[in-house]
Image (cartoon, rainbow, N blue to C red; front, side, top):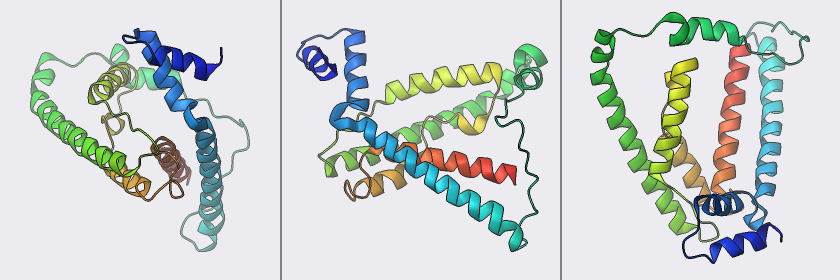
Length: 214
């Protein structure tokens, strides 16, 4: 029995179990209409954009005196983060837990963050619903509760190991708007909403890494 047959078997069940439902979602994300090929194409696009950005930033930057000549370090080839220093300087297990007064003082900020996050969910859900109505070749599976749970697990892990508030938001509303708008233009502009969002994220990460290195 191949992946498709297994999916059809589970999909025919009236009340699939948790693992059967998880498999069906995994199948829809990776194997339905060969979506894994879209991800590979998105990765190749990311690599191409990264190489172009490196050439522009590293080669043309010093020529036009926009940046200093970067110091190239050939070894080690792969930089391993200093996990020990990160833990010792950022983790509450190493630097200590905030006092009760600090927790109380943070309550107004937490309320503001909740309001902003709720607005992001409402905005993103409407954007994706609109895109889903335009594109009938793909079903966008948006679940606010699932996003909340995933964000909660991630944020707890980050808070205990390496707090970084800039990446603790549940959704990126501005990027969702940009990606969904291009997605509406059809498969030639963007084959899948998932590969489009992934490519955008990879490109933005590479751009930020390049900016920090320069």
